[in-house]
Amino acid sequence: MAEVLVLVDHVDGQVKKVTTELLTAARRIGEPAAVWVGDGAESGKATLAEFGAEKVYVAPAEVNDYVVAPKAELLAKLAQDKGAAAILVSATAENKEIAGRTAVKLGSGVLTDVVDVNAELVTEHSIFGGATVTHARVTTGVPVIAVRPNSVVPEATAGAAAEEAVSVDISDAAKGAKVVERVVQAKGERPELEEAAIVVSGGRGVGSDDFAVVENLADSLGAAVGASRAVVDSGWYPNQFQVGQTGRTVSPNLYVALGISGAIQHRAGMQTSKNIVAVNKDPEAPIFELADFGVVGDLHTVAPQLTEEINKRK
Amino acid sequence: MNIVVLVKQVPDTATERKLNADDKTLDRAASDGVINELDEYAIEEALLLKEKHGGEVTILTMGPDQATDSIRKALSMGADKAVFVNDDALHGSDAIQSAYALAQALGTLEFDLVVLGSESTDARTGVIGAALAEYLGLPQLTLAGKVDIDGGAIKIQRQTDYGYDVVEARLPAVVSVVEKINEPRYPSFKLIMQAKKKPVDKKSAADAGIDTGKVGLANATTETVDFAAAPPRAAGTIVKDEGDGGVKAADFLAEKKFV
Image: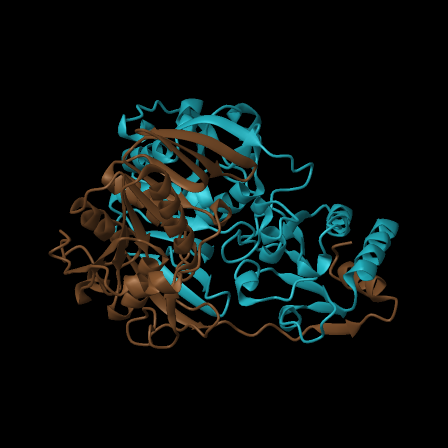
């Protein structure tokens, strides 16, 4: 069976959940082979084995010193050397870029923001802010596919996870954009936005001085915090938390929208969430068309009550 | 410094967007075309860089006839001139083919910097900047929230999940921008009038150095198999807060096993 390369997302040796989702999807297509870039493979390997990785290719941390290009060189080379059937990455902003460059190198097609993929490599997409569902496939070269986190239910099955070190000869062209500093802006202990099983977002209705009402509810649920564009534009919450068309796209099991009207631009970033709960003062707010459960009321009283109730029931 | 800004016309998000039943490409007649939102930030950044470092800002657009509206908008913001690659052979090109075609068109222009929005609001693939850098063999400075140029050196803040990376390169380079980078200007009446007289150089695919055997629907690297309207979400339960809205929401979350 041909190998399916899965680019591993990891932080400090901890494998992200989306990688277990990709390994699960890869098993439908062929033999999952994880591609690990940087340090920490030793501690992450157990998770990869648990979700069926037969191989783990480990590339040196130097690959991370330059923007995207060396990772594309690595994936393209592995795909050629191993005769891979497909390459799967998570559909984060950076990984979509890696997918694009890898596809160019391989002369392949690329499909992004995939919400499902089957054994025949037919992908499903939710487009136009969730209004249309399409199926697509790559017709040229080794398919390069970026899958949205939380789209596939991870299923464990044992894999050998045989480690193989990969040497990389990064080309001069790929060294053009050098990362000279990584700046970590505080985000506390909350989960990553795209990764999170639960996201609690606040909109204009939250007001300028009280995003704690959103954060408290998020923390009671172990959720990530998101924000609407209005909130980010007003400077009430940092840019990297923006959910929506020009921000990030999330697809959690539960999305809680506080004081968000649900304009199409916002819906484009969250419409594929499995369950949606909304609190808004305006009964006509379009967010209620999406909501599985909605409360028409003031979020400043409803959200703290909900937070208290959740903490009570834990 | 010569800057080329890539501008795409997209269907207005606020209108109903559709695909054509026959070839499964975007139905451009179904909705109003507007300039891709993030491209306005790219134009603004180019104008700011020009104001600081001098030079010229050229708009490069590939698309159908009606894309001239977006070109005029870009020129009325203050760009100097435009190149419009307009050829039926390009219809139905996918992301990789579009990046190829844009790279070829850029090959016929002189530039120190290419600036584009980090994604379009229609296809939202987010791969063009990266694929373009690959084709051109230039440094990829994408997802920029800040750009600084000093002589031949360029430095950006690349937005990441955790904050940002500081990335350095030498010009020429490809820069894609995110929304936080600036606040696009509104065209003044004077600039709108001037824009009507600014040159738009219309090019066929061949003029732009594009091999028509590599672009268009017939040569696409991906295929849309089918499409359908998304099934409507089942109607939810909406309650009015009577002082117990939070409790009721908690009941719902408990029922769904989130609590």
